[in-house]
Length: 124
Image (spheres, rainbow, N blue to C red):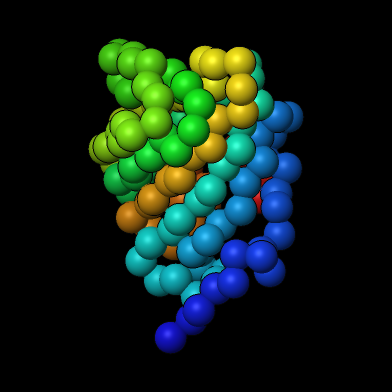
């Protein structure tokens, strides 16, 4: 049974203004799920992309916009978005403070199975 101390995990500079760390991932012993914690500076975003697995985004702090297919919403704390597998999506910080997000993916390597329709994959 893997037990992960979050304080031992490296903070990744995934994109300019977006930092994160995998709380569960293939590298921490997960076989069927990933958890990713992100801190996103105001105005920063992830370009249009898709994954082969379903994912969810929980907004802990801040305000974010999320586009899934042709639908866009602005969300704050207490909102969760469910993004179907293979659905093109993009997201970003719509507020003036750092946004804190928690992502859950139905696979142990969410960026290994991602296709970027705009821009490049994040640094991991």
